[in-house]
Length: 327
Figure 1: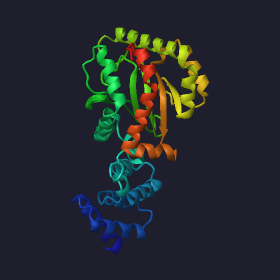
Figure 2: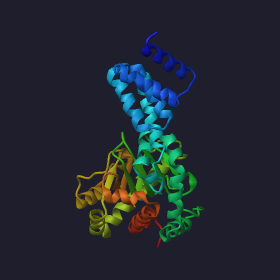
Figure 3: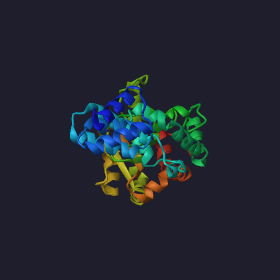
């Protein structure tokens, strides 16, 4: 038996014993140096490097295996797994952050929505705690309590919900059929990494909520109040706020409407008459991961909470007018 055959035999033996340690890495690396077209050795090497938490080099090995055989399902599955593990393993710099970075958005991109929500829940709930401590949160709670709501916080631990692929969101406790103070996180394939902060109207009557027909009628009524307030006294003010705060509409499940100029967005919002069919209407601030200033805001929890506070505070008069309270 020649050296290459002995190495191959040893590599297979180590794999069968689930031994992915240093010897396995060394043996498979030697094989691919001697036989660069050996896709099985590249695949084994990728698995070993993944288990050694050398994620970047594991990805390189698995990509090499797939370049030799695109139908290698083992390498494909391992590549998906190593990307997930890399997303969940912060670097030293990432461990120092308290908000949302490329790592958190990678978790959202690579995991099913429910799993991403579970993985990010503790980080989101710490953001909730910071927001709940603000004075605008107290005003929101007071306004809702005047209308009979029993909640003592804006966001509860169960305020975070999984959406579709690449999307999770949070809305104020009890706000399904109300104008929602809403936070949303997005990643591919839904849209590029970004976060929304503002007021949303969920006009769909689907889902498992009780009394859906009455609930939809209620939220449409709130939206009409919202529109009347803007038309009466907020047309110019809202346009100025949108222009100065990276504010955009989101209509249905589409990405934010960045092509609409602020005044056009306000006019569209005032004149919308088919909200039930659209199922979702949102106005607020958007933070995009590929913009350094926005990424810096999202990276730090305190800075992000301050941005949420500023946004909710600016939009609070519109919200309270739509909700029907007096402030």
